[in-house]
Length: 103
Image 1 (cartoon, rainbow, N blue to C red):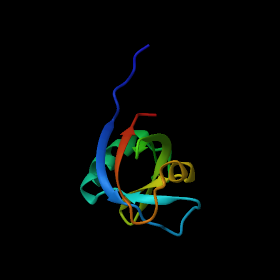
Image 2 (image 1 turned 90 degrees about the vertical axis):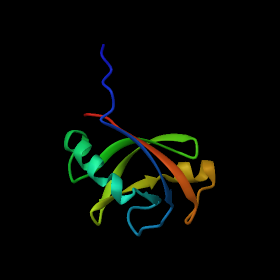
Image 3 (image 1 turned 30 degrees about the horizontal axis):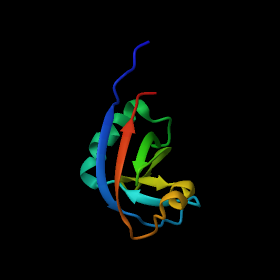
């Protein structure tokens, strides 16, 4: 069995925001300068609607989620379970690592 390398492996820092989208999520906005790389990887990884499945790490917790497209960029949903385990809240600055693999 061959294990394919990831399409994209990136890390960044962001301030957690609230968006009146699907509850119970808070979000970490992806910096604008990484949007092009994500769009390129999304051409192979996305399952539609611009949503991109990723494996994420935030505050030491690894979880599966999908990047949400918003205003020409992307948001990383911070799931309620991750919020509860880490105490993350709106306004906190965190380091986020993302891995995008081909589907």
